[in-house]
Amino acid sequence: MLIKPAISVKGSISLPGDKSISHRAAMIASIAEGDSLIENFSDGEDCASTLRCLRQLGLEIEQIGNKVTVHGVGKTGFGKPSAPLDCGNSGTTMRLLAGLLAGQKFDSVLTGDESLRERPMNRIIEPLRKMGANITSENGRAPLAIGAVDGLQAVEHESPVASAQVKSCILLAGMLAEGQTVVRESVTTRDHTERMLQGFGADIRSAVLNSKTITTISGTSTLTARDVRVPADISAAAFFLIGAACLPGSDLFISDVGINPTRRAILKLLDGCGVDIEITDDRRSLDEPYANVRVKGGELARSPILEGARVAEMIDEIPILAILGTQIEGGLEVRSAKELRVKETDRIAAIVENLRRMKADVEEFDDGFRVGGSQLFGAEIDSFGDHRIVMAFTIAGLLAKGETNINNAECADISFPRFFETLESVVQR
Ligand code: S3P
Image 1 (spheres, rainbow, N blue to C red):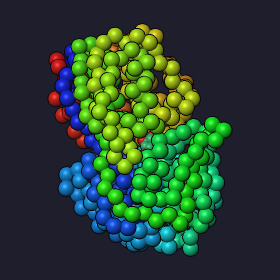
Image 2 (cartoon, rainbow, N blue to C red; image 1 turned 45 degrees about the vertical axis):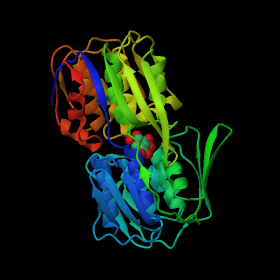
Image 3 (cartoon, rainbow, N blue to C red; image 1 turned 180 degrees about the horizontal axis):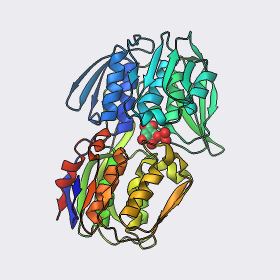
Image 4 (tube, protein in one colour; image 1 turned 120 degrees about the vertical axis):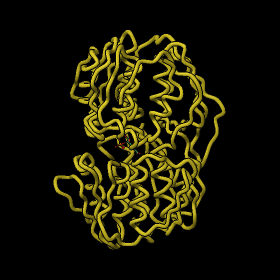
């Protein structure tokens, strides 16, 4: 994909449904009793992987455009799949489905593409085994073979890694466990699973105690079908918000963006950098808040500091924040972000390598990187097969001198199939 520099971005766009919420809506509707209509379901490949796996488990799911109807079968209504369940590139599909399958009375196998088969799974295998699950894997990587069991026992789990996928896996397994399953987090991660389960009627509650978020779910919970409208994905919005913020004269309006408190840190960060950002018409769907966001381009005044809990709040935004950092005089430093090394690719290495190719001043750390305020120059960019690397460096290409070329740019389809068309509709050259 060839990217030419831009002067500004102007206009109004709508974005795909939130990827995290779409996965959860489909999975939770599957184990509910009755029919759920999900509107604005993400059209990315990751969420298609979730629907494909659910169909292999016997679910009847109809899809017309972005409207998905799931005919729920209840907690124990899945059928034994006749082949391994292919989660494609999607870590959320694999880790959350593992939670749902761990307590079933049939065998199943979860697998995925080359990238997903490299990602760490012990973080879910170990707690699921403590619950009585029968899971085997080589070296803690997929494929995961999940054996039939006669029920699970509730556990109390404190995850050593800040991960919503791990938390969600255990909470979903807790739906099939005897007793009250408890997950403790010292760094609060996205809470879409908790909100969605509660919306479908589960007996689940969260509280903060001694600065830990403690979530408890009862294995006796049953779920009832609900209709859900998925807000636009704030992590997809981030590319456009930062593109607009960095190009003076820009004026961009994005409708119905999810602003869940565990996801909206990026808006506060931009505000803190002096970006003119306006949030209006705050509404809710099944306890997920969303609003319209308008951003104008101008001077970027202050450098953000990113470490500790703030990293978990913006974990998927780090690639595009690296690009923002090049446009601020004082640059940007990201630390405590080792998790980035086990995403769809090693995102620290991918960011550093590509920023160097664009002649930015950048330093790599084991747990992050530092980028100085830099003029970017067009270059050959390696996507590393990672959708967020593609989208971040496309925005970098708009800000650079000269042309930028990105290989394998079609992997943007993992979360955002119309990314390039949407961008072209607002870019001014
Ligand atoms: C996600 C959680 C995050 C995030 C991923 C989606 C989710 O991963 O990076 O894109 O939907 O729960 P971790 O929970 O592994 O940090």
